[in-house]
Length: 309
Image (cartoon, rainbow, N blue to C red; front, top):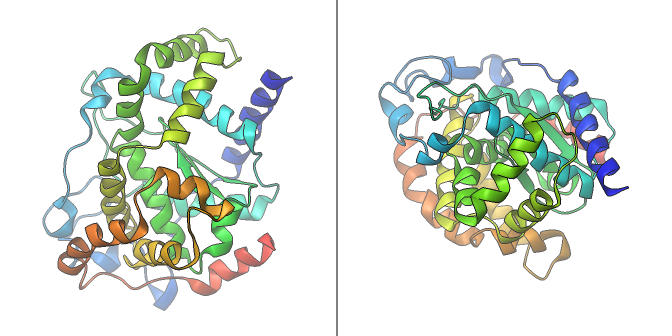
């Protein structure tokens, strides 16, 4: 029965993929996207450019990519997402799922492409989904699966805030944070799951289920979370969103959440304190984004948010 639930979860996510589309999301004020940031980011277009300005503030992806091919990362992502969705299903709302996917695809398009173990650019097959859970949290997996919870979306107030959250999770993928954690915590188990997936066996091994649960219960290194904050702000800004989106979310965490609040329990136990994250971000924000865009798309987000009530 448990394996059937995991398989059903993977099929549900595949359905969400069919709803996704890529478009230039920021539109407030009559303009958006990378053109808005041309001067602030030192020119260039698309996610691969890092010429001048803030585009080359943070460089280099994790060496963990050298251990895995793109195919292996996708296989792990499939297994990881099946475990996550086996615990909590996707929200059954096509409009909400499509909206989050569109924002996610646009932000992900601004991210750098790391190299795989063969020295080739990794083309992530990005998948975005909204998990039907009251918990306030977001997740990512190797290979490009990214999830936010209904509980978190209810707390956000703008598309810029959503873009910042998604950017943070996208950074965990592009920077190889989960791959590094897998290597530290048990490469043999992860490799077993990859081999099983590549052999055509749809079942997720008990070892993989245990690894995934342990990984998301323990969380990533604090340094990885700080790195994902910086990169997440960068990706959202490249996409034409107000860079203050993610810091606004962190302020919300500090003001409304705590480790004793059940909705925030996992988030606070697996991440540095919001005030510490804000302190780490402050120098980066102060020096790099003074001329960046200020698009938040609050009204558009509110239309989607009303469907969550």
